[in-house]
Length: 351
Image (cartoon, rainbow, N blue to C red; front, side):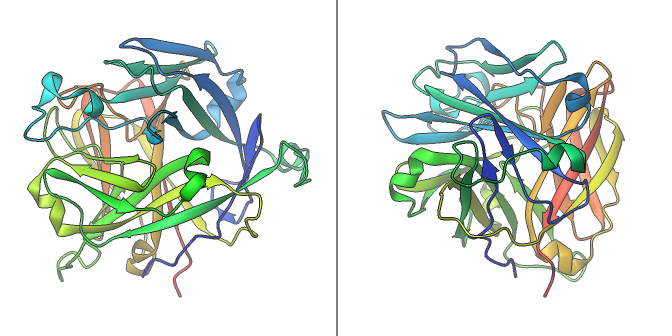
């Protein structure tokens, strides 16, 4: 059983976001917040990230959120492209289901790429998390009255059944806090397990499926009242899950311990799938709360994993899932051999 983590928080600065060490296997981490402004209209937005080459080489996570204040809709970045039977597939998918890509380069550019008009999302923020030394970490002020030390809280939403080739809303109860979202993610797993695979296949949310236009993606977005899950294949109704929404809250309590395991993927693959051993026990798999990754090229272009192409049929995707058979299946549908990758799996300590 996944333990509730409503009380987990990090401290977010208007220049930096930094978290407690807990039991993080990769060491102390610090997060930089980059204000990107409005998402572009079918083009690439570039913003200077001001990270050093050393900081880029130590990046462990890259994500963002974009908010449309006119509708109170918030989407995670990258945003997974999906479709339904009325919207069509591939490049004909409706505007709301087009993807948003995200990466950063060593030339000081953060890049956000859209293939349709997303300019109504005027409040886009990107977070870059990277490892720091104990001495560097200790220099960050801990004063919670400081404007650069805002706390956050994580809201959990149980999903008893994911939709199959459809979208379903699930109430989040955030109220006015919907304006203060920092991150949106989730985990999905089978409702029924088998003896052959007693932990089943565990999916990160959002999820990019294997192969171009495979039609099995799972996307998340948040509205003023609910979190919407959109799945593009009927088989997804066999899954249940949990969605997590992190938001600013200065009343948040202390950070409990959580384990994060780093798994070296080595050189990424040129189209296709590869299996990697994860070494987690069934109890640890049952307590997973988050999964993510990054791929870095020798030139220090950093790409988040999962990585979304702009449309349902895009060929730039990187996706993965975790199995109880001690396996991570990583899939790409383009040549990624210029980069090496690392996956991170966060889990609560089994009771």
